[in-house]
Image (cartoon, rainbow, N blue to C red; front, side, top):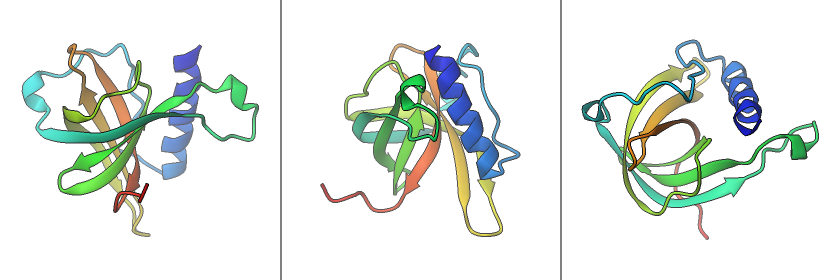
Length: 132
């Protein structure tokens, strides 16, 4: 039930972003070869977040929000992870990108976890790290 609820949120985000190159992936798809994860995400912080929707939020599963540094820029990434990730470096690869005429951007990443499994993440923030 959790992954179905998250898939609805992910599909909704992708459709609203107008992304044509970004697609919904099945979590059951096997991870790509480790050599294809050519980028490194330095996770600075991870937290669970509850989606804010017009519908009852108790029906929508929480997701994990990661803050970190990727390719010399600070990013926020959202996805359905089994738990919080401790700070550190994780292999990641860009699997979809849409740059729109209005200047907005949508990016989708595939994160390789230490146990060899992987998860799909959507870019949710770009810019300086928030002051905490």
